[in-house]
Length: 395
Image (cartoon, rainbow, N blue to C red; front, side, top):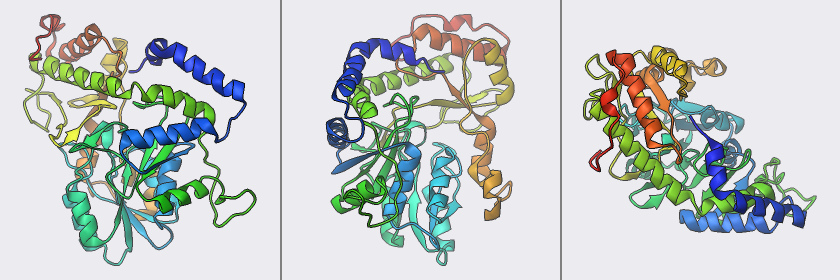
């Protein structure tokens, strides 16, 4: 699925120098490395401020907390996401309201959100949290229109979308705030947990800085209750190195996705624009929207007999992952919300079909060919020899 060592070898000297710089300075919390990363990442994303924190999970909590999300308020979001999307809402003391996904993109469906808004006039809906799933922005034309009409704030869960964009504007610059994760598997990754919150509101950024530091902007004086969620200097220094390469890495991911599309088409495993798997086309590829600059944090397909296919690929020593096998509204810890199977059918169907295939910038063409050939063998009963040919530019 992912080989972090390949990337490290290409930037080893710069990473080692950055780590040595921090060790030499002995300045581990805050300081020049954090200041520089916050400044450079804000400039890259086109926002007024980037506030580093300890993880992507904390980034979402900090953003919601600073937006006034709390007890007796609600936040609408998608059930088809990582657990932190919903847990950050509950950590604020608020109630998550789940709306279903668009089956074409697997992102939060604005039409379903509007339906929830119309039903939720007594639920004090403070925010909507779209998730830019797998590296593709949600519909950031429609959500701002709804925000204006229904008077809520948009908090972007951009954990998987550093460098993604909507009509030329970067993820993280499309709402009141955006939360990013720099977990080691992410497109821009640290050497451990790390995250940041982005905003164009300087007063909001100042509150985020207090919240991440026990609610304090002056040592031992606390204006509110916060937490300890600081981004340490070592991670900031490593992220500064990788930030210089992230555009190239994201572009290579896009090229790899294009090649996957060509290989699946050549194998006869997909039908154009189809979002339903069939025996004739057992693989379906989620749509990539024209307005979105997709950076393919994951390359995910819908697959017929997904679990059997995954077992077969594992036997072929091909790594895969399921993001996500159980929608959030059906998780045991959210039973108190009262959702039941069948309430959000598109999310539930996706959970039975999605499969993430190997995707990282250093993935080789022959490795992609082997992945698709193995999938063709599983479905078609042949070894996919016709896939092993040089790809044309049209592929």
